Amino acid sequence: MNLPYYPNWWFEKKQTDQIPWANCQGVDLPAFLKRYTLHDSYLAGIEADSLGDGYVTFEIKPDAFWWKMQNTIPEPEFLLLRFMKVYQMNWSGPKLANSSVIAEAASRRVSDIEKERFLDLAILQTGMTDDEKEYILDSDLCHTLLVIEYRDRIGLYHDPSVSVLVMGENAQAISLPLD
Image (cartoon, rainbow, N blue to C red; front, side, top):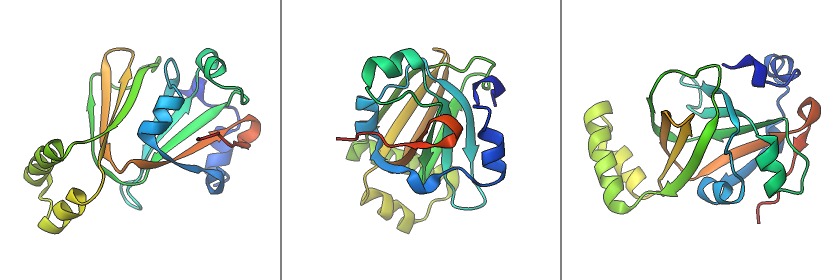
């Protein structure tokens, strides 16, 4: 957790359950990352809900320079990417340091051959059932990679649809054009 990158209102809103998740937008992550860059943004934290719904949320402070270069909408204070269905998450490199700058963020759909390989490994590692395997085989699967400071890598296999919540001053939701 990198405290300098959280807005002043973040902890109060989060503790009192006032993050406006009702205003989040469902997005196809590969398409979203083609339109909106996370380059030079700060990965402030990662929240994983392993006891409830099983989601993973990336807490991101967007970079003002790159945001203004790409968009005409107001610069957000904070951006949340919530992956509702994560099948696997890997981390390589040291833990989040004081500077967790996102060098690259990319997401792509996984080919059927790659999906089979992933599932074969997942069965060995987790004891996934045949029913779970069939569900994934019949679904779209994405691989998302965040490169942090050109050294750490966070990779996820997940459903392509994620929730994005962009917030301005005092957690006011900002609606992104997604066309």
